[in-house]
Image (cartoon, rainbow, N blue to C red; front, side, top):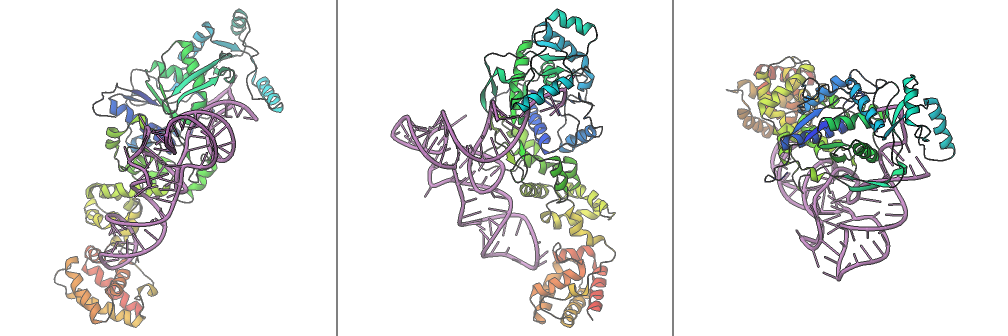
Length: 496
RNA sequence: GCCCCCAUCGUCUAGAGGCCUAGGACGUGGCCCUUUCAAGGCUAAAACCGGGGUUCGAAUCCCCGUGGGGGCACCA
């Protein structure tokens, strides 16, 4: 948003239904809503769309709030936060929706329908058999209001449907796509209020968005086909529309379609996931997730790619959203995560790394971890790689196999001799520091006619038990003279 | 089947008629640095879906194809 343009404070909402775990797509929707609210000095509302008790998942809400908090997307109004439009659970707003459904009937924009699910189902099947587009027949649409009211009063089971115009067309505006014109005859008389008294999305979301003063609706593209219906509903009430933004969908990495439930499960086996909680457990940073998803469907310019949440609040520009679908790319995710790991101050990174060391069985303190951080910071793409890289520092015993201890291009005897020679040097080193080691050890290599890399490789394997490790001398200093000598002696023995 | 949307390197994207010999990033190859692995630096290959218009001029505007995606519930 240009600095000189003082935008009106936006009231926006993120309104998920608690039916499953929070994934990348909803996180991005939440992020864009959050950014618009923050940068305009507006309000970010969290609303729980739980009108369908059949699909309700009791774990979903906890997952949702913890995911949003982990990402740093704190809502201003909603569950736990409260606000002037309490309750923020649609299941607790039934009376409001009922009243509005009645109002629509009063205005001649809605009607009672007495068709049973079985009848509708049969109707639909018949239409499909005739290769017609499935739609409501309109059977109850023209029942005289007095008669319909009487049947309702008699306690007959019914729903409330929207009385959608059948003539002409409607032109709606999506902010990323422009005008979209649709023939009214293609818009069905959708059910607004179920026979159990709960509202459907089409009614509940419109009523709440209006009542809560929502100025910008940013939601998934799957809602685009029902936008004309939604605009009709707004107009039927005589309300002023919000600005509509339909965010592009995320496609699976192949780019071929949305991720299916089955595929999300299979993905976990490959060490990838689209669920926020999983990403956290896998050692990704919220900063990495945010940076990555922010750039799927939005860009700042032709070169800037590194953004913190704070940067995004400053630089996000809602007019730069991109309507085309985006395939998710986990390689790019790793790249962004690495960038943010490297951008963290050592103390901060140490604090984030600590739980991963604990989980790996190393009970250490922050003070112990701090000096190690600079050695591994550029070597990690995810936090869980910390213990893999530096775990040897806290292990009592390492036990590399003998063949691993043999130097490149050498036999066991020559390797033992070389390690033994290095051992002699390290035993008498006045101060056991990284800075003091390099010169004499290079001299040893030269004396033995070895390349420095050959000797260092052997020492690395013997001291760390790993072929890939943080820099050797620093590692040895941290391991400490006693342990280094012990490990080298063990290596010589094993090679004999 | 019907309705709607989208279309630039493999992927994410920049590009609002001449700044385009189409820019950046990921990934990939090469080189440099280097005690391993990274990180970092340099570098290379890599795209305007096709066809018609409009215009002095089109990646950019229009139309038609084609391809891809989404939607058609008393789910959201």
